[in-house]
Image 1 (cartoon, rainbow, N blue to C red):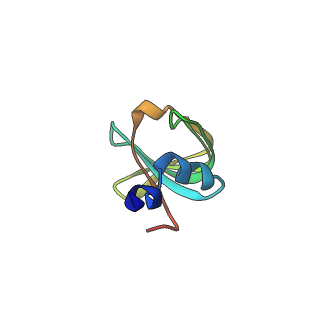
Image 2 (image 1 turned 90 degrees about the vertical axis):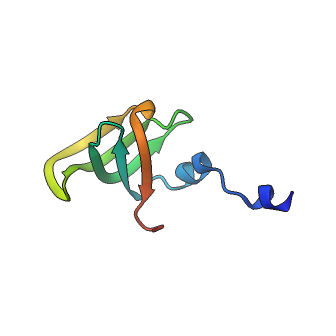
Length: 81
């Protein structure tokens, strides 16, 4: 039982990581890097200073990006890995 108490919930970690840099990969293989301003319980994200990345190259810069949670494949916290 102690293992489940020490387990970290992904949504809780994301909510505590607002204002940090993240990489978001979508199911259609589009990738964004930027600062996560907000995340909700559906993993909808609001990102600022976002860049669209393809083959490790920046192809577009956006001031603000809103990502719908059901399109997200994974979210990587830049300072965690």
